[in-house]
Length: 304
Image (cartoon, rainbow, N blue to C red; front, top):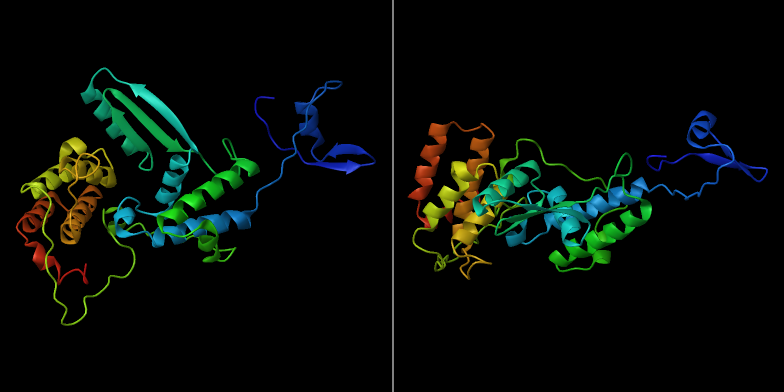
């Protein structure tokens, strides 16, 4: 046999009788000894509860983490990679420039992949499939182990244990999907939940900036330039932050208003990349943002 496949059999008078005799005769030779592995199908109810729990964790991510995961599916795959349920490939390139080009292509082909460039070597980690059927399907034992690992990981991100997270969703919950026109989904620092309104009469003071004076130009160039367009918006955002001296390359961290400004640039970029903004319209909006005082965002955050 080229690959394992389940065959339904029924015990009758001490003998296993195949339900599909033609398939049994095709796969097994008369007089030959075979080892039988019991196949226990996975529970669709458990599968649905698992995806619902991950979705619940995603909805409750703190802002600095929600910026990294546009939807719950991205979070699930990232958690699989971080907990070792992944496939890794090392690609050795001739030059560092070629390595970054390969990394950009890898990020374009799979936006949930974790791509690391070290010199001229590119490491691409992709999540293992947890599908129930077909080639590459995950067996029941591995699914249970990977499911628990993922739930432990995502629960830790929101400061609870996996039991508490699982208790927040019914066992038969489905997972809501984002609509195709949701442009905020792919925008860094986006928040899928309701915005917290500023109480009437509250004093709002703009936080001191830890970024360099040219941070706006650096962010716009990195996010909107042709050299990074092959990367996902999330990857471009992370690259821009690193170029501005944010971790792991430095200690600078954007404040809330700066991050809101970046989110707006990212949202415009998503619309442009999806063909919802013409080039001239995009440039006009970016020009407005370049000269917009950050304090002007305070009153607009509720409407964003």
